[in-house]
Image (tube, rainbow, N blue to C red; front, side):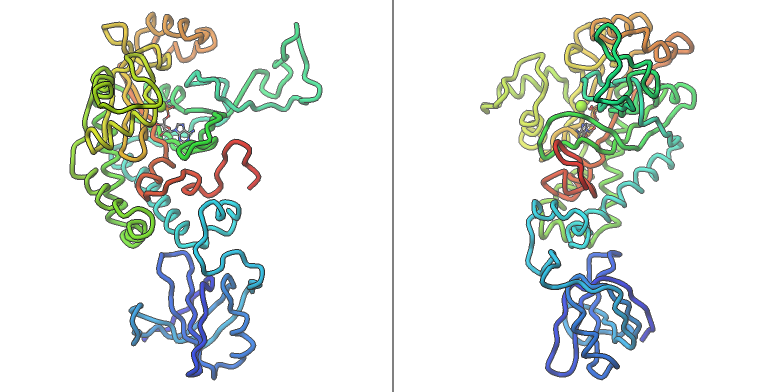
Amino acid sequence: MENIRVQGWVRTRRDSKGGFSFLEVNDGSCLKNLQAIIDANLPGYEELTHQLTAGSCVDLLGNLVESPAKGQSVELQVAELKVYGTADPEKYPLQKKRHSFEFLREIAHLRPRTNTMGAVMRVRNRLAWAIHKFFNERGFLYLHTPIITASDCEGAGEMFQVTTLDLDKVPKVDGKTDFSQDFFGDKTGLTVSGQLEGETYALALGEIYTFGPTFRAENSNTSRHLAEFWMVEPEMAFYDLDDDMDLAEEFIKYLVRDVLDNCADDMAFFNQRIDSTILDTLKNIVENSFERLHYADAIHLLQKSGKTFQYAVEWGCNLQAEHERYLAEEAFKKPVMVYNYPEAIKPFYMKLNEDKETVRAMDVLLPKLGEIIGGSQREDDFEILVDRMKIKGVDPEEYWWYLDLRRYGSAPHSGFGLGFERLVQFVTGMENIRDVIPFPRTPKHARF
Ligand code: 4AD
Ligand code: MG
């Protein structure tokens, strides 16, 4: 018997004829509710218990005892009870029945009180912690790269603009916006990647990683895209592409193992309610090595798969989600790392191979999800980098500071970016990326 205090939100109340009320209370610390028993002899019983409807908030003092009944090992015998806030049962949107995830997205401020969102957020939290642990154990330095920047790392024209100019009275010179009058005196936007700034620190401090918000004005309304997401980007001096792939594989395995070891209850819930194969899938990831496949071989495999894809497959094409999933889910039934992509479809900073046709790029593809990581060895040759910039329409003068890294003490180096929400999605088995971030930002949706 132990005297404890519990503060949390009522999930359900049941009144028994024997002069007791049973409360299921949850404070978010774990999936399971605590059963609390209120004796009808408790002072104020009548008045207090009728306020204890789903969603109300309580403070309970009492004895924690072994439970004689099935379903829980312990229960709380309430000695003192206080109601902090009631929740009108006629209006509280989270009633006992199961709600669709679409509906829950419309009440993003209340959905953390559901079992699923609670479990997702605990796993998300554990993964964030495990990411820092992984890098810290390996001597990587955690670097904060800027959120406002003038460089479009991926060159895809997907930057959100940041400006204090009056949009009704934009100053112009020769018909073009005069950014010299803007706050930063320059055209700026929200970062699409911290990589370029990360490289500058890797080429001084050795091994660094960033972990921060990333923004893309990409009009993709899919279950894998957000306009605001979190990305983890390690960048390492003296790593070649093989080292980069080794680290990516070790990283994903470490994170999956950490969640299996530390979030057993939440993971059992996902396996039971969301995706009955998730535990097997994750064990399979930890136990097997990832397949490494040349882009050219991937194309070959896709062509002879006998499948009809929506997007045609030929050397030089971008791999679409359907192709990525075929490789990881059907062809190999495990994670696949595709590398050496055609230079024409990849950004300027990737190292050109000797064949001059391909770059030292790699993507990690996971079953059910597709791409989770994109990375590469970086071009460390000054002349080749300038050429690649010109071909890609990137002005070398604007990137003089990036080129300086190749002018002074250039070194082979590599890195990758892992989409944090895609990781949470993969580990929990959740189908939609909007349900693994507290407040999703997607086209036409940023109000709350
Ligand atoms: O492949 P991406 O575009 O690579 C980069 O940004 C590199 N600069 C990374 C690097 O080498 N340091 O993005 C990396 C990952 C993707 O594999 C994906 O997991 C995630 O970021 N990602 C997104 N996640 C959610 N919503 C989006 N719109 C995403 N775009 C990319
Ligand atoms: Mg990519």
